[in-house]
Image (tube, rainbow, N blue to C red; front, side, top):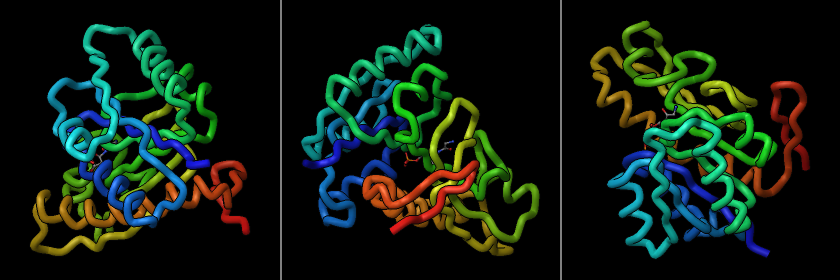
Length: 202
Ligand code: GAR
């Protein structure tokens, strides 16, 4: 049976599109994106999903207490029997309730080499700090910000002429590549988590 992926996003949705392309091309085999949920009305990612004929749902988060909101989202994900949740530019911290509902079944993509530069504007933080290597991380999600065991990372060298835009664009390319690869690994089940380490098994 196909594994069902639920994508949560708040904005542009390029990582969602990269996942959808990988599913369509068979780079993520035996999987289907069952639905895309946004907490923001008018998120471009929702239109992108609709134009691909993928089921979407906007569940506005404004004014709701964190767990009350997450209960609504979890109910929809359960209703659609989602196996794996991919956060793709989803700008909300998950409640312990949400994390406990899908143990080791929630992934996030973040545009830095964690644990460096968690939070917002990570590419700008990296440039301002002066690091020579930036990058991106796919990790399992826990209730802390941009934390959780790391599945894959990719390194992107910083060039002297880089601006926030040019560095972000090169990192984004790597995000699209490693997110699909990480989803494939996790759906395959060929890994184990020891402490904070995600180890490949065969
Ligand atoms: C991506 O760069 C993603 O790594 C980042 O938001 C962007 C969303 O772009 N996520 C975070 O910063 C999470 N802490 P997208 O909507 O085009 O995928």
